Every structure is written in C-alpha cells, then in structure tokens.
Amino acid sequence: MKRQAFAIEALDRALGGGLVPGTLTVIAGATGVGKSQLGVLWASAGLSVEGRRGVICDLTSRGDSQNHADYAQRLCGWKLTEFPAGDGLLFDRAWDPDRIPGDFLRPIERAGKRVTRADLTPDEWHEWQAALARLYRSATGFFYQHFASGCRRVVFDGLEPAQAMSESVQFNLFEYLYHHAIHNDAEWTAREWLRERFRDNQAEVARRLYDHNSIGCLYLHTTEEVMLDALIARPIVQGDVFAGANTIMVMGRTRTERGYGRGLAILKHRGSACSEEILPYRIAESGFEFL
Image 1: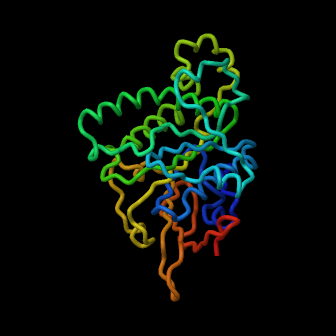
Image 2: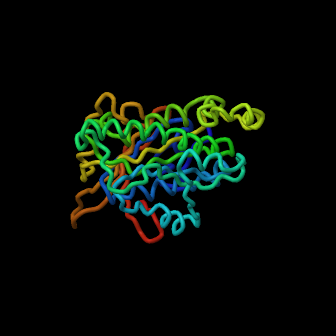
Image 3: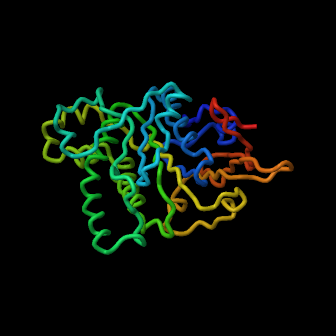
C-alpha cells in the first residue's frame, strides 16, 4: 500500500510509512500546539507522493487567522489561493477541471458567528440549517473539481470545541462533506454539484472518474485539554469524530525536568504497525523538528 506520508522522517517512521489512503485521521490538541502547521505539511507532501498537493478547508468562525497561507508559503513554498464561495460563482464560467480557482476554502464567511447550538436561539439554529444547505453545493464543487484533477488529500481545520459534536454547525458541515463529497462515488459527487448541468458535463465527468477510496482526510480537532497526559486519557464518546477515525494522534504539553515541552502520541492506527512512544518535538522557524 502506498502511504500518504508527511515527508517528516520521524513521524512517517512512527506511522509505518504514513497515513492509510482512503481513511480519516484526527489530530487533536489545544490551540497553538502546531496542528495547523502539521496539516499544511501533510497537504503539501501530496505533491511528491501523488503528484498534486492537497486542499485545505478552514471552518473557523472566530475571525482570527489560522495562518495557513503563511505556513504554506514559509514552510513549503506553496502559495495558497482562496476558492470563491457561493453557488453563483460556480457557474459564471465553463467548468475547466485543470484550472480550479483556489485550493483553500473558507465556507463560513462572517467572522464572529456563533456555531454551537448552546449559544444560539432556536431561530438562529434554523437559520444555520438553511445556510448550510447553500454551502453544501459550493463546497462539494470545490472538492469534486480537485479530486477530478488528481488531488488526494483534504485537511479540515478551525473546528471549535463543543460539548457534543452534533450540536456544532461546523461539525455538521464536516459530516455532510465527508460522506457526500469526499467518500462518495465520483459520479454521484459530480451529480450533487452539477445537478441541472450534469448532462452537459457528463462526458467530462466520465473521463475523469476517480476512486474515492484513495482520498485521505485529516481532521484537526481543537480541544480544551492542554496536557498530553489528559489527551491520552480522554475517553472516546460514541458519535464523536474519534469513534470513526482510522488514526488518532494527540499533541500536547509535556512536563520535563526543566519545565515544559511538546509531545505527540499515536493512539490508534488501524491497518498498520505504529510506534507506541511519545514523540517529543519543537516548532522552529523552519517548521517541525522531532527530537
């Protein structure tokens, strides 16, 4: 099996060569622990493994920058461009799978918008459901076009902590896209996006069929727990994203003789041998350094 490597020798070795294609991987940790950098590095490594970089979907609603563009440019020499959201923009031009306008998607446009049910009135929650229905088609088009052109890696970032994942607008959007746009038959995904224009583009769709089981998905999950020990001990609750993940990695603070460090642990990696050691690391100007 050809693994989807990070191109970071120590981490790929610990994972038995990298992530298993066609599966979901969750990396969990508190804000600032390095999840976004690791996600960008994995997406960029697709260029050397599959011949095409991955794509990034930022579901943040807080308004603060996740620094994806800076990480991509500084660490990988990759200039991220934002995909224009909105159904109308999808059809203002002829579909050209070789010229996709953007490899970075930010579907939740209004900064500061609350995204958990506990923070919303019933009317606001229903308004979100209507908004999601509009977002689905645009986001499906983003993913489908990239997959039809050879992309095989997807990174989701910016999801905020919630008491129950089902109560999160962000998680509902992720769930829909994962099952209907990422791990779905290529022709059905094209139908989901093109709809009334499917017949006009059917020949092109047939020419660019792909195996959705070759697409890997990396979900970066922000936690309230900061310490690595607490993340390792965290129970997996039925219905959350951890239960369905093939691979789970946690990143957090560790105690050392002189203070604090950072460590990464692989809690689950189905279908592969993996290291059970805690991998200490630091974040330098040049990126990740496993010690």
